[in-house]
Length: 160
Image (cartoon, rainbow, N blue to C red; front, side, top):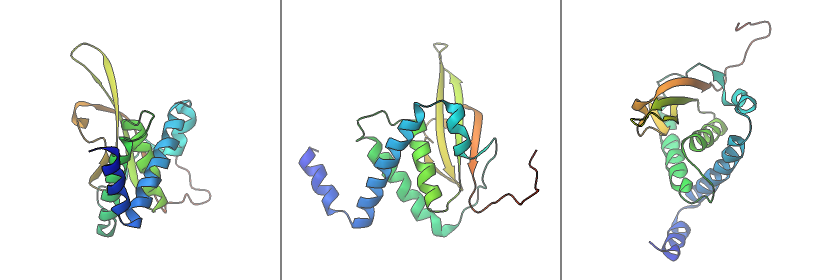
């Protein structure tokens, strides 16, 4: 499909879809910027370390989650920067957070047959994998970050 066909397809989309694609592009850029920063500085913004959100979901959110997943998948192919697994997962987490939808970002490692270590990131919301689900079963989870919505620490409450 050439550039004119792609542009035509974009302009035929409804306005909601267009804005979601633009938003996905913006958050992919934001996440790529964060990826070049020290991970120790970025990690606190990803949510509660080594925690997970629930696997149940609000059925009213499933369409939003799927639309965000599709927008990130589509727009990651059109960025002029690298938009691989971690960038997609962080962008998706931010888009879900904006809509008050919980998610968990997973970081995993594996060893290739060649002996080389590889890393992967994926994002889950409820029982739906927003990004990175392809091949995730090969990876051992080394970190996870839960972005819970609406859970506020009460004054004097101690989480150790």
